[in-house]
Image (cartoon, rainbow, N blue to C red; front, side, top):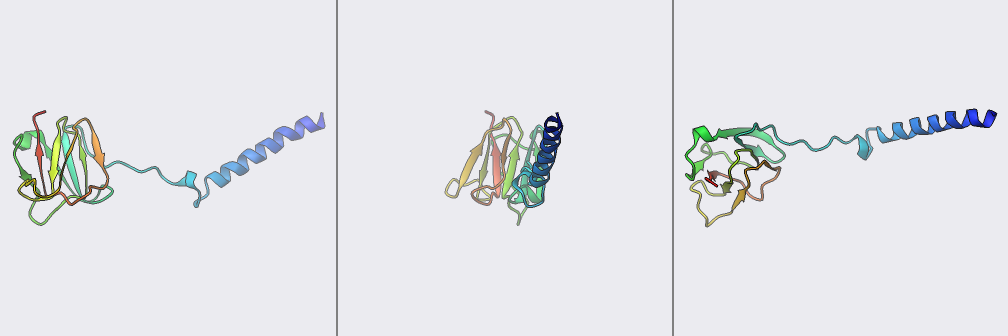
Length: 128
């Protein structure tokens, strides 16, 4: 009977020890999961730095012309983005939406891109 009393206690100590190791600052379990950029439904959000950091520019469909080139403010660019417009969005390396530079289209169903393969300087929102 004494053995059965010790077993639950030793199991409790083992579980507590494992939990302490798992939650220690240097462990992988303690690492915070990556977070998505804060971007509301119906918006296109572009951040100046990778990882949804830096200056953020936010656009809504009501404020832009569909299928027209929209340049970011002069001197700025985006390194990460979230497309929650419900429509496809193409980002461009050039400020004129020129297809001679890099460009990429992101679906509008809810796309988060923490690190764009190039600096985006303009975009187009497509009808469908």
